Image: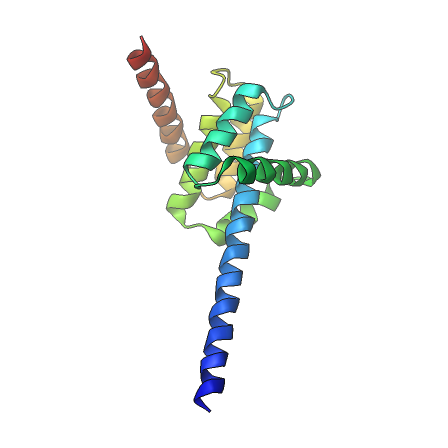
Length: 159
């Protein structure tokens, strides 16, 4: 009897771990797909932005080079097949809390500022995505200013 209870608990824990791994993978793909969508809203993915995406997923999510490359390939396919932003934001709203959603908006700003050229299409896409993620206009602007300030600090340190 105790053996069957122990086996049941073990299977339940394995199922929970598998669900958590699936959710984590889903979160990574959806996040990367949204960032790719932002990075390519007006043109193909530049080498600078591709490198920034690679750095983000290695440093923020602890992926190695191989896993990062595969994630970006998978996410690119998802980004190209999606017809609207809701596909991404719905899942992110389910998987993330408020801080996590604000972090996604900050990452979007980091991607578009990677080459220090932001256009109205990128601004509009981030505005719409932030709105769908429940990030207020004030927070979106503050996140943008934070990214710009970080870039200026890096430039000052390099000079």
